Length: 294
Image 1 (spheres, helix red, strand yellow):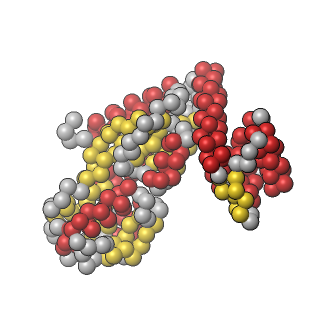
Image 2 (cartoon, one colour; image 1 turned 45 degrees about the vertical axis):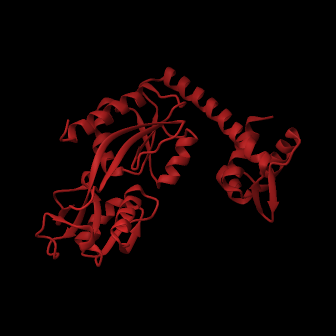
Image 3 (tube, rainbow, N blue to C red; image 1 turned 90 degrees about the vertical axis):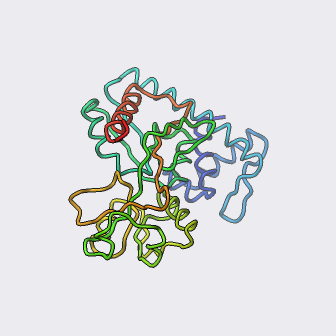
């Protein structure tokens, strides 16, 4: 069994489509198909059910996938540890986030400590982030909501109130707080389902007896305040994303505990470089500095 076969198998297993996997791997479909065929011959069983051009993992494939992911995970951790040992002042920090509003000041503070460390940051939905986390493909996730799991180290670092952002001149702009039911006839701008804040807000509104009427749903939370300023709709905005320069008025929600948990997540078995461990300390120090209870 070859290492290349495992890499190709994982790509096909995750996409369940030879054409898509070949595109991701930058190889020809025929080369990919032959490699998977040789792997199945080595194992003595088929790993996929063929349905036209689609492939679907069968029971053999599902069982083998778990083992293959674990094997490649351990090899990747070994490579990372050697790179860190050989060049501790350099390297790349891999991050995923659903709570991205706090990242700029955190990254700025960390860069002062480690100016030669590169970042690779992905803004993802909760489901996408968890998939990367379980596969050990990121050092840390800055997540809302907090995610629990046997292989996940979850540390809640901040309780972030969610506010209602309205444009100046809105009927509620002279208020300091509002109830959820007072918002049931408003137009909203928000992120798509799957982002932690959106899912939390929708659940709270459903408990109050209504579903928010979204006129815009996107995947860039930072764009929402511009849409509020343009009077396209109002928005639920975490307090950590508030900007005093915006022409926006923020209200507290007075009849429910609308607060998101921000958590720092990592894979329990992933090797963490010295730079990654220092990043964790920077995160903790940042949230201690913004937490009024600290």
